[in-house]
Each structure stands twice: as structure tokens, then as C-alpha cells.
Image (cartoon, rainbow, N blue to C red; front, side):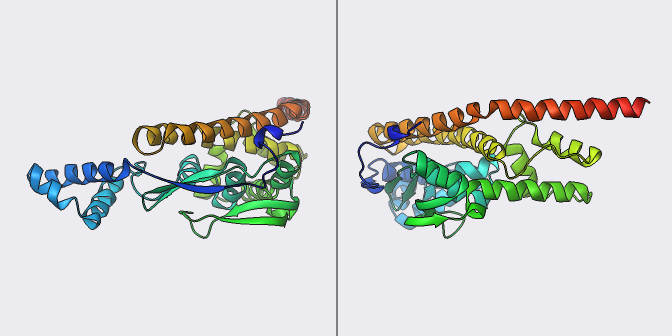
Length: 298
């Protein structure tokens, strides 16, 4: 299936990044600041005067965000916040953000980064590795200034599938060595849900000595990607709804949400096309489980 719905014409990411003013932002920041200053003993008018100062506003915003880390009143990357909340490992985020695009708010401006998964070829490059790809890269955890690299080769081990394979390999090693999972590994397991019970299969493999999962398969990568997209897009939608009420014009947000819909649709179609393989693995796992139970009884 061609993913031509991702692009309107061959525009080579025309304006992949553009900025627009946030006319509501200053008033919103001042209102938050005024509220906090009033709670600190300032009367309403004195608080308002103090909060016309930009430094006072930023200090107040930090106080508010310390109380509620999900508030998005200052600089942030909407994808990074969502990915952190759902537990996507940091080394897998660049790949997904390149597929979904993102919105970054800095210095009272909002920047839209378009999806780089413009067609079938670029999608596969991000998923499994390939040539002539474009990718967003972050220089730190906040990722307020993603850099765009064009016409690069994504090595298989650096692709989303390669990183998912490494996560799965680490889980297997820790389980076999009876080592505790790290917080990031627990978050990864949580982020992929249990529709395709990877953790159960790992346990069965360890007990039976029979291979159930091929960690290098497209099936594992496609499943984890579908789950990650599902979780992160849910969080992004919630955040975008908040943005629409406070900061950004609906026209730009609706365009971004439509792009998210297309990314998720394509991921779901890929996963659906692999259902036969998923069912085969599940059937194999159940047979092994039944064999172990029968062996234990005998």
C-alpha cells in the first residue's frame, strides 16, 4: 500500500518546521503567575504588577510545574512529554517521533515538525533500516530543538526494529540470569501492553528451552510500534486538546491530528497483515504450555 496520503505532492518536506505566534501565551502565563503570587500573600493588584515581569512569570511557571509535571505552560516538546509518560525508552523515541512528527513550544512560539514517514519506502526505512531516509534527532532529553537529517542511511541496528530487538534481548538475558528488571525495562513492558503477550512467551521460552519468539522478526517490531503509537498518540491528543484551548490555532492542530491518524492507520494495517504470524506464535506457545503441564502431571 502506498502511503501517499502522508504527503500532498512531492514537496520534500516543504516547511517541515514553521513557527506561529502564541497570542494567548503571555496572558496565560501571567494568569498562572498571578494565582501563585496571590497564594504567597500578595494582594491581587500587587500580584498582577509583579507578574508583568517575564522572570517572575517563569519562576511562577516552574513552581506550578513542580506541583503538576503534566502542565505544559512553558517550553516543551509535545511528543517527548507523551513518550516519557507512557514509558517508551529514550533510545527508541527519535524513530517514533520521525514517524509521528511533533509540536515544540519555545519562547512563545509553536513549531510544527511534520511526519517524515511520507511513503512506504520511508516508513520501512524507519521501521527496519534503509537508505535515503530523513530523521529527527534530539540533543538532550527535553528535545526542544530537534535537528533534521536528510538523505541518510539508517542501519538495521539503529532502526526502530533494531532497538526493539535489543530491548527484547535484554529482557531475555535478565530473566535467564534471574536478574531484576530495570525501571526502564519495566516501563518498556508496560508500554507495549499484553495484546501480544511477549513477557509470557519469554517465560515459556526460559522454562521449556524452546524458541517461541524470533526477536529479529518484523512481527515483534510491528507489534511494539503499534502499541507505542497507540499509547503516545492518546497522550498527544490529550495534550493537543489542552493546547487548542490555551495556545495554538485549531487549524494547525487539526492538520497535525489528521497526520497522526494517518500514521496510526498505516501502523494498524501493518500489524493486521501480520496477524497470521501472531496467531501461529500464540498457537505454538499454547502447545508448549500444554506439554509442560502434561509433563508436570505425569
